[in-house]
Length: 76
Image 1 (cartoon, rainbow, N blue to C red):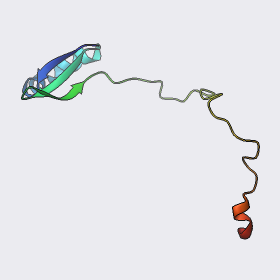
Image 2 (tube, rainbow, N blue to C red):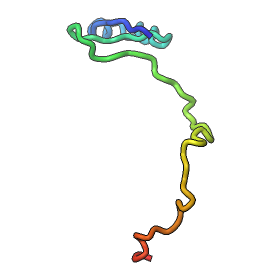
Image 3 (tube, helix red, strand yellow):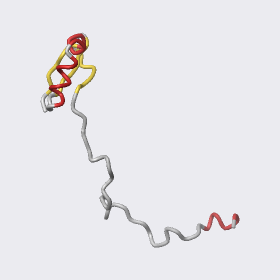
């Protein structure tokens, strides 16, 4: 996705128009005195809900995961 440079003052005066274009996937790089300071881009939208089982196979627990710890024997 290529970005288009736009000055901060122009971005401020055309914000509503820019937001419409951003909603369609356009990206703007906002500059101040010719130097880039920010990007205006569409946000990544997700489902908002976790997917059950999405991490299957990524997390492993050892067999003694819930075994008592030797360091804690004095506190029992």
